[in-house]
Image 1 (cartoon, rainbow, N blue to C red):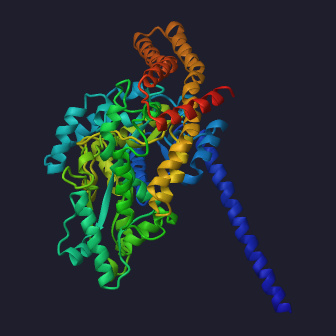
Image 2 (cartoon, rainbow, N blue to C red; image 1 turned 30 degrees about the vertical axis):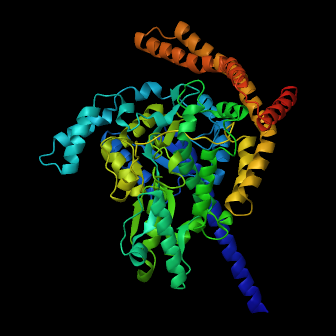
Image 3 (cartoon, rainbow, N blue to C red; image 1 turned 90 degrees about the horizontal axis):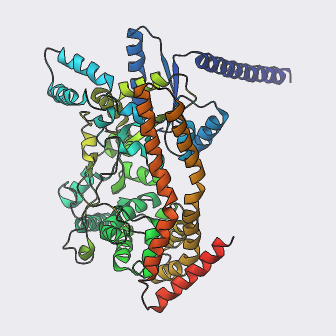
Length: 593
């Protein structure tokens, strides 16, 4: 009994010791954080990228920057704060509203309105040259002998040294431009594309070669061959590892290939893209229905592919499908460049017998001579809009704005951008940066067509939710096309009226805030510093603020005009006439609330 009591006391003392250590650690973290906040040479960076290699790559940039500043005689500490995706929105919102936000925050997963409220516009900064281009030019020019890669970089840096910082990015930093504010709020490090990964060893066994399919019909043939090989050899083998996530990737890609011409056709104001209300007008005219041949073909194509997905793929997560591929249980999988390093590392960690060589190819396009879908094929979907991602903005709570800008400039020279993306396994976005060998397959392909057509009236709106509810049972085999089409068409008017009202009224609800912002710019121009350079910058800001304001001021008149033109083109078809009656009845009800 005494022995048990002694053991109990020992366990209690051990538990108390652990608690005290944790408590002391927590106090130290608070004290450390407070000390960092009090120092003017500390900047904190928060992001949600927990993928393999990303934090390590960012840390290398941080270490290099701290070493550079130390050489300049300034002690600087840069702290990265990784936050899981699920908690990111809540964390950022709490920090911004509470006024305790870090100096730099990765842009995304929070409302765009936060940018205008809590972040510094960077438009003026990115239109000036990046001073670190000249530093890199000096370093390379001083070398007695250059590698071929350094020689190419030198030629590029010579071009970029005197140009605006934004011009050093492959997309001119357009990926970080926010149209509603007519401002740039972020600077990014990477770009991303989607490809198909395949098991080269398995391809050799099944096909006798490891060449990837180059056309959609070849993808189907390869998938059938892998399926038959598994049956003949009694192996549980998947042609395409997939979950709902991958199925959506296929849908979006091939929907674009089959309907990009419809996007141009439905573009009533010639803006270059078909927005939600223009798709609604196409429905009211009877041009866009679930029975539209091209739209229906895009669904049937995904159904063809779904025959090669695992049973129950709808209930699987993205991680489940990835696990099946790296375990060698699938011939192919589609995913983004962000997964490349993780897949390779997991395959490398397998026992030697389970390892295999990975190949990468672009999703095969539909050829014009395809017997079923060729008549609708427009060509591959361009990746010209992939743009600059992994972007960071500077919050208005920072006391180190210039230091934050300096860190971003330091990090976006060709050599630094190469380094961070090589470690992260991502695609560089600065001109002159060199992608890793694997990532060369992921380089954005700007050739192709833009635009696609679906039934979404408002981004993330009620129509989107309705369509998803009836689409997935169809793809999983629990429904048929006619049931999908009839259910969608019957319920569309009520849901579309809600989304249309939100677009129509929402445009004017945001005008007061935009007028207030414009007034603030005007006050700065009239009453601000009379320094010519600063005054010019303010005048540019004033002009910039006018464009989105005017756009919203004319939105309702534009929508009224396009609706009037649309109703003049409604055909004498009872199905379309009924759709119109149901829509306007629901819209009248929505507008009266």
